[in-house]
Length: 228
Image (cartoon, rainbow, N blue to C red; front, side, top):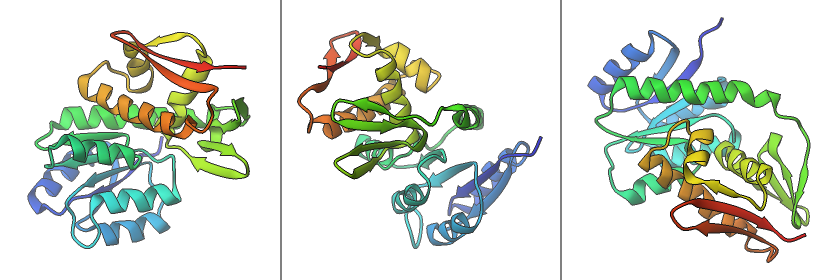
């Protein structure tokens, strides 16, 4: 079985060496010390997952993630950063990242998360390429897209998976732990914060349709309500 290919971007020489050395036991790793060179490589190479530092020269991690998402909405992105503010974590997730680990991180945790995202990506082709109506929107889960009036809103893979989970349980309460386990594989506080970010974005998208709402059920979870 061929090894998965990872784009790793980190400008700290020592940290980059140690992390890449560990990852290369399991994956093919292409390392770059700045965002601009990494993006040039992304445009010509096929990667299974991207690991990005935030504070990078020439093109920072947030800019790089935005550029990557414009070309590929599905490839998993993990941020590794010394920036610990909640606002930075939320910004990274809003840009389409799948996870945000704060330095110093453990290699065991990083590899575990890589495996979770790679396994999820491998399963993605099995998604049926069908669309469904969501109020006045049309949802295309295979292409991570919501369409309305000729306009297309591109979702991240995680947002698309979250919406599909809601639709599979339309008008029924979904517990927070059920959503977290289904999408992240763990019921974790920081993953819960990530989930809240994605739900907030879906709410903003659907606010144009008064017949769709994602209700917050205090201390339990959420419910997608669609009036027919």
